[in-house]
Image 1 (cartoon, rainbow, N blue to C red):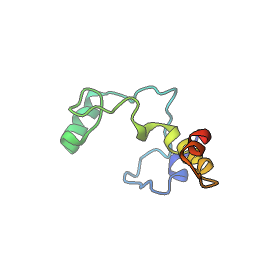
Image 2: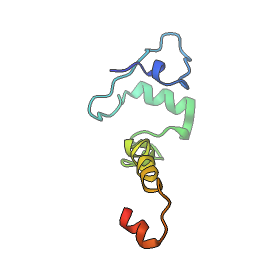
Image 3: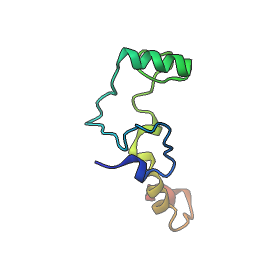
Length: 94
């Protein structure tokens, strides 16, 4: 477990009773309580991305994968560590 508010410097505390951490087990979906859905619909209208909304959250959206945060940047760093001289040289590295 990790404390979200301690690891994320951009986390802003807006509610005094807000929990300091959250737990997501194995990609389980968030709670889907009717009262919560009604509140979010009233507060944020069509800007809510959730199940059964106008705008669905894409299951394999790039902004949701760990690879975009580390792997692709690391591969690019390794690939361009020495500047490639030819196209064939570049293809060989990949």
